[in-house]
Length: 160
Image (cartoon, helix red, strand yellow):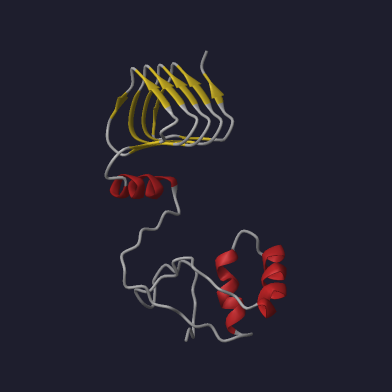
């Protein structure tokens, strides 16, 4: 049973962390919605709020886990976990060099490019690019650019 919860304390009371796996009973839905309206930028504090209203139990994970709460942490997790490059069978790659840790989703076309530690979501067109340590969201068109440590938003068009 949880007796205290602190969102990102500067000096934690323990080594336990909340990994973001939650199950709430329906009776708490109204409380959660009301709290989110008042504190949209501080939703982690919902647990502190609920402690006074309902018992909170935990399930302790013993398995390793990775915090992917930032762009850099997400890329590092991808690099650690993506042991083999994964390219969708319907993606088309022409004259493209793949380094390590590559994920290319369905319906992508990559031409005359170099990729290293890159995640490319579905429906992207990449031509004549050097892309490293980056995440490209869905429906992007990139032409003739060099990217390193960038996150490109959905539907972005860059280049010629």
